[in-house]
Image (cartoon, rainbow, N blue to C red; front, side, top):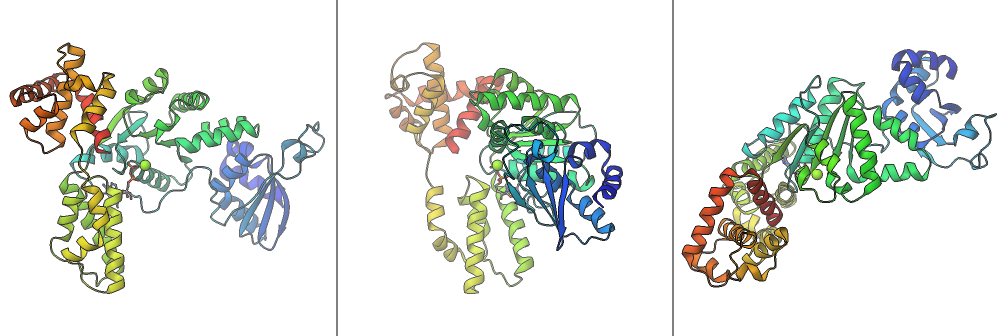
Length: 452
Ligand code: ADP
Ligand code: MG
């Protein structure tokens, strides 16, 4: 019956897919609702279970076999095809057996979080551009930019947006092959393919997707052979007109240890950043999560001003904000009482305390000196050479922006300078950053790193 099923499958999934993914499989057993297959590689079985499991189960069922799950055993090529010259693997029995549930999901790419949808994403000024670009990509069709490169600090919604794109895209076209994974997983898969000599399958698999999404790409910086493979994968897909979505914690140009040719490729499409959240956005997110929770727990009582208080006090990242809210909800449903401002304060002391951690002038001076490769002592010292004076002014500017120290206080910390000197420095940088995009980006980067 496998032969008959194959004829049908070839029609339903198309000859290319069939030849590449299904044909190499051999049905070895069929009993108690489980169909067992021998597969020459793990990649093939992963791919099949992710994309064609339903087709296969459907087809077998149509032939009178009630199949509820597929099970794959990886048997190296030589062993699968008797008669082929027996390599050294031929004597090695089944290497890996993997059981898959009837949804056919295996961890080839990373699983998608069902909560990370566009519907659950609150749009505000800091993320509206990123959101619009993500929406555009999720609609499919010619997008006009490739890749979409999303960047921003921790917990600002990069991963959420990527999953949302994948959900939407897949929903619009269920047969589309969307592959989402982190750069770390990409590396892991690559190394595994090298080790198991399945590099051709690895390449085949990555070059066969309709959309590739790689999260936190900064991870591959400094990892030479992974970068190399990533570069080729990237190019192959772009050449085929397949959409790519990448995220990172900074712009391509700012990723140290990333090859120039990759930086320039990554910069070819649309680069959008997720800005740090504003009070309004944080409040919006809190309100939306509270509404969602109230659907399950209608008697949830949150006192006046509690959400505003959280939006005000927890400013670093949305993940922490969500964690705080979750804790309050848990508290509310256990104790069945209203969450007042006092309860919230008491329940969240630890989170509130770490969030109050202030950026110090010390931190700023150290970070800026390191960034421009000058000595920390030069921050306080008298040198007036431009290569020292400019970073010093940037540090003054950031001290004014990121701490609540007065100008005279800042002056004291910069080697006893007068407050007018600080004022002059701050103005100078404001002025320059208005004209010099490179400087503005440098400052934005420093700021993100200090606030992280
Ligand atoms: P990143 O990948 O940028 O570090 P994530 O996408 O993992 O951040 O987001 C962290 C958490 O914050 C997730 O639970 C996500 O759902 C939530 N989140 C971030 N931004 C928003 C937003 N605008 N609306 C709703 N939830 C958000
Ligand atoms: Mg992320």
